[in-house]
Length: 364
Image (cartoon, rainbow, N blue to C red; front, side):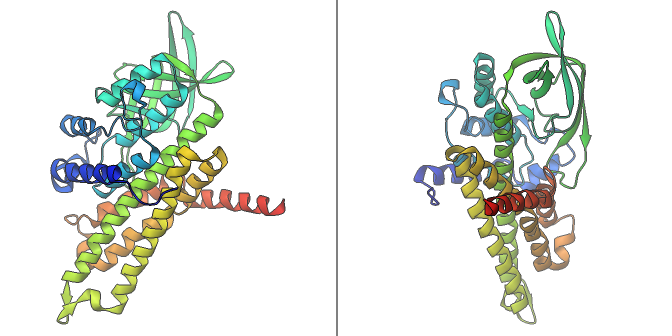
């Protein structure tokens, strides 16, 4: 596992960072879309597709770049640092990894559309709900409800796991279908769009059957790349706070010269760098490790979520009164990090699982 970025990865990072600063800044893009259900614009999505960001993980045979999860993590970190509210993670990671593991011609066709930027997709894999596939000649229809689906309002295609006889099948539905209803579920993070989805005899295309390991692996991938997004957000708000500590003066000197503020900055830096090592390992494991190590690395990244969220809280302490104001961006970063902490359940559940695995290993 190489902890240093290659020249190509540095170029990818810098290109995405520059694009987001110029085309999707917090003031002119993110804040404007806080109450917009889609969380994106055609111009910005088209720009990400032109950069190759939507097809990063799509196999070359389907028109994508065929790169690794480490590369996806680089993009995710920059999106998190910019508080990007669009459906990139749902489309370019969740949907792509599920379709790639499934294989087959229908999946390849959707992958090609994602790579080209002509389709936005989301995958309801973390919360499968209760959905049944019903044969209604000549079609299959889906009926049921899913509590939380990310970016459902922005998606053209939704990938849904449904009970298909004795198996769990993966189906593609068009979100424009009149039988599909999406309701925005407001959470603490307005830059993340989550929806309750109801399917009432929605026409669906059966793509195939995902194994239990493939479903878990895809869920792990989403957790890992979301951790990279949170790492970017924590890094950005930490940097903002440190720059503020250098510039803000009290009693005739920069507040960064006060020991109490120095300790806060060091705590943030330590937490961010510890998280970075865990995220890098998890990204590597998603492609190169066995299923057990991959899953454990995802669990560790999520178990650390509470500490990473604390970086946003500490940054606001450094900012003082201005950090709590609507006009300042610090509170948006804190909400992004708190949203990560709550994503897929709180850190305690993951800490318990890791502890149980370690205990069982020690008993052998």
